[in-house]
Image (cartoon, rainbow, N blue to C red; front, side, top):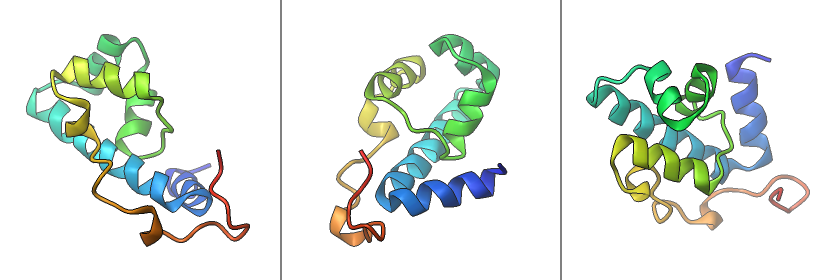
Length: 103
């Protein structure tokens, strides 16, 4: 599955989660580059592999809170600098056709 196909699949399941994942990814990429870290180096710092960092930066990863905390520690920022949960209201994003966001 291509990155575009993965992104569209995630968006169709939960548009708000997809929006958060994309914004988090953009912030991780920006902060990583500002600190002149490679994706490989950031991956080493949090105990994962380069493809995982790539997926995160492209908004294709469904992260646990513990992973967001690990990335924040590695980049020496607050978790809220990676993801602003107050930026969007759920009512602004349509629910999937069945009327329920996936758990």
